[in-house]
Structure formats: structure tokens, C-alpha cells
Length: 232
Image 1 (tube, rainbow, N blue to C red):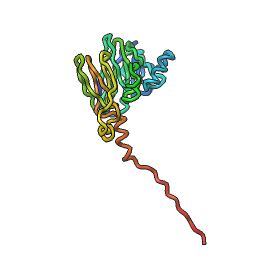
Image 2: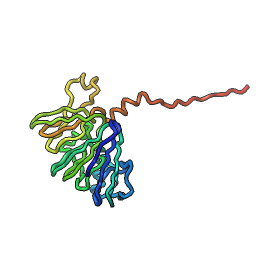
Image 3: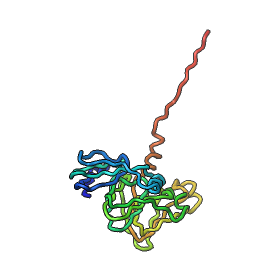
Image 4: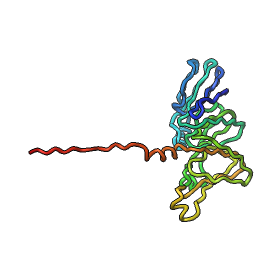
């Protein structure tokens, strides 16, 4: 799949497909396409559909196949960036709901945290998404992505919602914040995510969940006024 990412912080990915070539995407991600590309909505096996629901995706996903050479464009759901990861037999782990599109040859599955505590307390979720195989995966990022290449044993401490992707060679763990004052007044929650190398780790500067929380105080609330009338 040949692709071009456009749009700055309101990104979209234009994918050029050869005749017979196909891509998978999240349901509703297609923005525009050439008429020679055919759409097929598929669910796959029951286990696949169940896994997508648990990992924050929709029940079905769309499969687009080019009957002749043409292009199809996928748009991001939130302000940020689209990252492309080229897989050559290895696997990556991504946050739930981050999948945008991929080659047909890429397999998407659920990734269960080894420690239930991580999913319950870290805010990253007990179930993430795993991509493996050979081909391109397009991942959505909230805000700006920052990539770190961790050496074996090297760690990063990540606040809830900021982890985007990591190589399967990395290890996830949950770590409790130390200090009573830090817990009560630090506004970081009780736990943070600890990622240990070796492997790549990608974090994002503005998780959409944080953006929504920060906007709530500025959203007008509807007030209901009542009038009373008196009769003489």
C-alpha cells in the first residue's frame, strides 16, 4: 500500500491501491475514494468481533478492495497526527481505539495485559490492540507523537492516557505513586504506567480524554428559569 499523510494537525491518509489490492479500516474512517474501489463490511470470527469490542473498536470493520487502480482516503477522528508503522514479521502493541487502517496482510488482534492490576488502575486499559504480520499499519495519535528507543532494562514512567504504542519486546507494569501529598494533591491519580525496554515506545502530548476533561468547565450549562404569576 502506497500512502501519503496530509492535513497537518487535522490529518488524513491518502492510500493508492493497485487492482486487486485491499485495505482494512475502522468502520466510518473512509473520507473519500475513487469509484473503482469496492466496500465490504465484515466482522470476521466471533472471537475477532468480541475482541474488537473489548479493545474499544467497533463490532464491524470495513474492507476496501480496488477493482482497478485507484485511491482511498481515511481521516483521523481527532486533532493530532497519523503514524505509519511498517511490519516485517514483528508485532506492535497500540492503545485501544487508535487503529485507522492497514494492509490486508496485517493481522489485528487483542492484547491482554499480563497483570490485571495494570488494566484496572493505570488507565491504559486491560485490553490493548496487537498488530502483526507484514505490511503497513496506520495509527492515530492525539496531539504530537514522541518516540523513544529504550535499551534493555531502560524505563519510562507514563501518565494515564499518554501511551500510544510500543514494540512487543517491551514490558508493561503498573506503579503506585509514592507520597500521601503526591496522591492527594498531585492530580496524577494513584498509578502510572511503567514501560521497560528493549524496544520503541511512542507517547502522545494531548490525549483526547484529557482534552475533554479540561473543556468541561467551559461548556455552558442550560439553566431553567421558572416564572410565577399571581392572580388578584
